[in-house]
Structure formats: structure tokens, C-alpha cells
Length: 117
Image 1 (tube, helix red, strand yellow):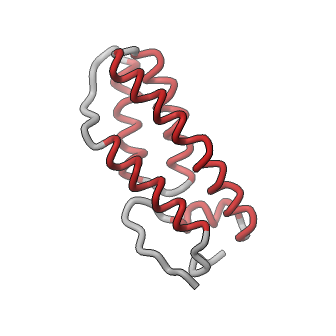
Image 2 (cartoon, one colour; image 1 turned 90 degrees about the horizontal axis):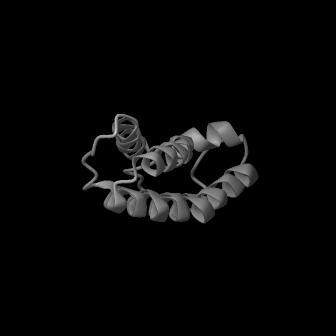
Image 3 (cartoon, helix red, strand yellow; image 1 turned 45 degrees about the vertical axis):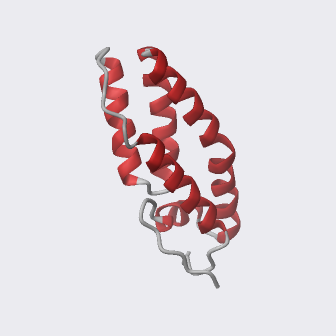
């Protein structure tokens, strides 16, 4: 049993959706496989001030972070998405740090048998 301390995610959110440990692990793995590439693309779009891409990518990543219970990151992505739709820049200084924390915690949650179904 490996009970991790979670600050940026709530694994119970994904477990309620998944319904069992096997599906939880598959969904967590899917997040870990796809979210980093979306994040990389989002960072590039932010650097280019490509509002269309920022809106699309922040929306897609927001859907994934919602599923893993990453409320702070989800809120930041929502802010980026709304600002992009308005063709306005948004504050994103916490984005990288939050993403790394979320990814680390999702990875830890895969082996955490203390997460109840």
C-alpha cells in the first residue's frame, strides 16, 4: 500500500469515473501519455501568442485535468481559454509548475492502493 499525499489532484475524482482500479490505471496512463504533448504545444502557442491554438489546446488539456481532479490547473486553463477567445493575453506564470506537479501526482496515484473505489 502506497498512500501518497496529493496537493494538486484528487484521485477520488478519477476513481469515481473509472469505477475500478484497472480502469483508473488505464485512464491515468492515458493522461500521462497525452497530456505532456498537449502541454508542450500549449507552451509553444503561448510563446507565439497564437490565440486560436491557445484556446483549443487549453480546452483539450482542461478536459483531461478535470478528470484527474486537478482543480487549480483546470482553473488556470479555463482562464487561458477564455482570454484566448477574447484575443487577450493571460497570466500563465504558474502553468509549468502546476503541470509538473499534476503529472507527478497522477503518476504516483497509479500505484497508490489507498485510493478507494
